[in-house]
Length: 245
Ligand SMILES: Nc1ncnc2c1ncn2[C@@H]1O[C@H](COP(=O)(O)OP(=O)(O)O)[C@@H](O)[C@H]1O
Ligand SMILES: [Mg+2]
Image (tube, helix red, strand yellow):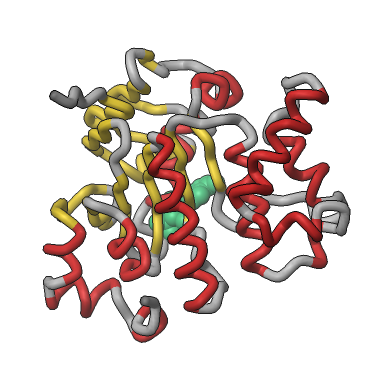
């Protein structure tokens, strides 16, 4: 018998900037090992949702629970320490620093021996980064930089990985490779919540999806249902994602 354990629970969360709520009444549950895609137009509130989960912006109403931990007012670094890894929109790397130094940022509180051990582990996941590890991050291709951003999040040994638009600006072949690598990570029990405007790639990867429109979840379903829905295809799957296999 397999037991399912809950990884993340969002209950009716409302969050925004200043007094203006951007997302409201968001409910979402992920069990350990789940893959969920959040899709929606530019400005719908997808990044705001991830920032609320990370505690980068306060939750005005509702609650975020990670495993058995209510996150309430926990600062972002404590959420990371509990096991939430975050790959922010635009990657947010340090372009003048080396790949290795960027990776070390993801485990800054660990001993240097432990950091080195973890770098070996993440380079095994992204072997293409191995020969680039001493090079400047800003000189890498977009795909390589996205690998660094994901690898940096993995340096914290997360149980849950949040990714914000990982496919932005990447060629279809690179997007496929990236998602294949993420699929490989699921074998180790990782849970993944991915936000994408490139709905097709995300839906092919994730088991389930939600659509966010103007800060609210308006559609939920299995990814296969949503991929087959002509309204979804029209609204969220333009030509840009057509060639991703
Ligand atoms: N730092 C901020 N301050 C004020 N408003 C913001 C900020 N970031 C985003 N917003 C607003 O919140 C809304 C949702 O933005 P965002 O969550 O970034 O959407 P998405 O990631 O779906 O494109 C937009 O109207 C945006 O202008
Ligand atoms: Mg965004």
